Amino acid sequence: MRDCLEGLRDLFGGESLSRDELHAAKRLVGFCLEVVTKVAEQGGVDFVESFDNGSLEQRLEDAIEEMQAEAKDDEAMKSVQLHGYLQFGCGDWPR
Image (cartoon, rainbow, N blue to C red; front, side):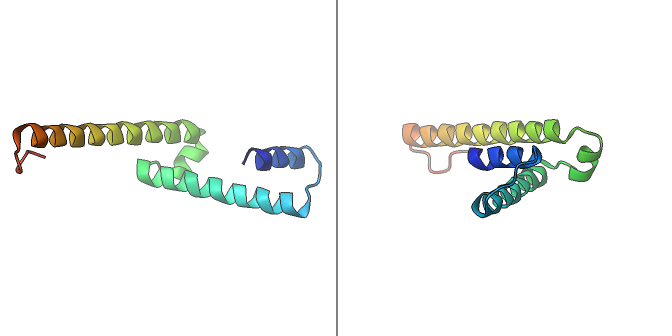
């Protein structure tokens, strides 16, 4: 990916890319758009509005941080549930 990014930077600077570099650069852009779209969807970010007002990057970063916090909370809850089940033998441990 880093090589593709460097290739894109070269292209932006006026240097042409080889056929393979061009193909890889196009794939990188496609992957990046897919990632941004998924993060925006999962994070409830209005992509168009955020892009228009210049806050897209910050909104996506905030969404990633929020998803990370939720995942860590879920993992902690599962750990507590498992610990309680093992310690007390409670099949109906609260969820």
